[in-house]
Amino acid sequence: MYAERVELYKKLEEKLDSKLLVYITSDRPGFEASIAQDVIDKFINQLDKIGVTEKISLYLYTRGGDTAAAWNIINLLRQYCDTLQVVIPHKAHSAGTLISIGANSIIMTKQATLGPIDPSVNTPLNPPIPNAPPQNNYPVSVEAVKGYLAFAKEELAIKDDMALSNIMMKLSEYVHPLVLGQVYRARAQIKMLAEKLLTNQVTDSAKIKDIIAFLCSDSGSHDYTINRREAKNSLGLNIEKPNDEMYNIIKEIYDNISDELGFGVPFDPLSVSQSNGGAYNVKRALIESVYGGSNYFVTEGVVKQIAVPGNPGQVPQQAIQTTKIFEGWKYESNNNNTTDDATDNEC
Image: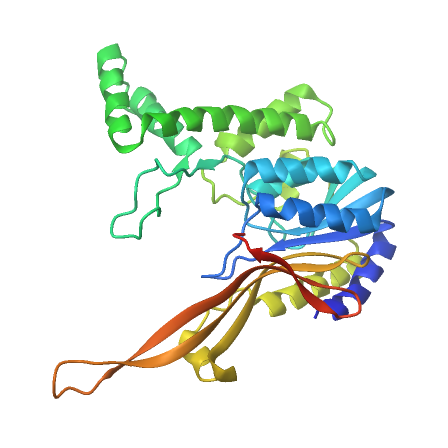
């Protein structure tokens, strides 16, 4: 379906008077992907094909990911253009919002949303999830830790130093002290990065601090969504509204990608096992352009129905067995020649 999108990319480039680069991370249940460091080389390859140019428009759909990777992406893009624009067809949350505020302008459709940029810390020292496989830990939200301490001080009005010390000790019983230290560092880092990035579209230093305060904590929840009107009128970001013709192209691109990546479609192992010999191929991330082809992150495997023996005299029960065969980056060129681009990589 990349071949179909190329013509749409060309149309959108003409409307934007820009070179278009598309970056998508899927939020399909069970096959989510996120912004991660392994995309940097893919961006470099795409941008080298595009070349240094006056303006680049990044078409972005993501629920977020690694803050450092987002910072790398925005700085890399700026090495190749004088003006950077982000086009948001639907969701650009968390680290996706961080990328967006680093652009000179943001095109948002009527359904497009940004979100808070307060990070979560996830390390091997994080609290383990009960009854989950090893290394499955609870992410520790920076603002959740801050909220816990603020609740004690402000809502419960605890002022005594000893009592506050006991509250902190209690917290450290559940969250490792080194994780709490990383939480503090992550909060300071995200504010510093946001301040640097916002100068590309907001010049008032007081306004920048207000925007950072809202995106980092004042929004109240990491799940809070910011629509086009709030982003422009309340936050003061440089938001542009696409005209009807441009919107139709943006939407058609999104619908095509959504169909290919299966947005909103739960993975049904039983159905898969009954067709195509049980083989499945699920794309989870895309980095595409007219000039550089399509880099895509894919999970491939086989689903089989197997009989599970029961007690003597009982009819065997049917179960589903899923075997992953490949997970990593592949590449499709403009002439539809497809080759492996990387070995097993986590996205």
